[in-house]
Length: 358
Image 1 (tube, rainbow, N blue to C red):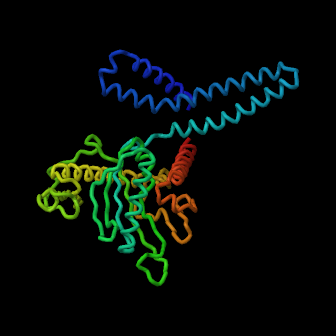
Image 2: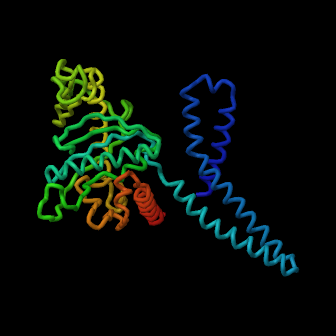
């Protein structure tokens, strides 16, 4: 581990020297690449530098303890030694986590698909609430959201919604949200006061660039139709809506959010490319050996991952057995505690896997 850390310090020094060259600012691609690499290596270098300083403190304190006879000074040195040893243990763990192989998709924007499942109108209403939960969380992270397609049920619910979240590291935080989300509550339409259980499915997909996934347009069939619903003067008067069919897989994507047919076509292609890329990632994930597969990561989409129980005011994530009694704030986008716990659980599993292999 320490050989690798020394190499990182050397590489960081090289990057900083390159960034100081007068010509580098003229080459935007090179400049951005160097800045990205620096931002990835800097936290590791900082932690390792502090680790080495703590190691020196331990050595110095031990040497001074052997020479020092004054009791008050000895107590101070012992305290300093104890603090440095404790910090070394913490930094070793931090460095192990920082050196874990990085998911190449972590920095990407995400495309989110939410579909109502069992429960009819109640499931559609819950899908709309979960959509708003993610939008509010995105706002708290200073990320931008963009609607791609929406199919409403007429009473404020969403049968299906696809939207994009643009922001640094969006996939790294939201990738654990894929799966079945279950709601338990008394629907407004229920006169007998009985608790109903409804489900929705969430799919979080990294935005696929052309470099990530090569899409053959010969495999795509485009149909245009007249958009329906609210959308200004152009809606219902021009064939601006686009239906895209991917012939090999049978995937169909409809986009009518924009007044421009060209913009709807671009959005449909963006969703298709990301969905196909996600399917490829799923295949790779499923092909991994069981021992290496993360229990928390982007797993089976049909897996029930979380329950939102309204009568009890609680949210339970079943993968890590985490229950929080703050349903209202979670529905208002306060999901950071859940995300942090999922990331920590995933890191712990990956670390234990590396230690077994070592």
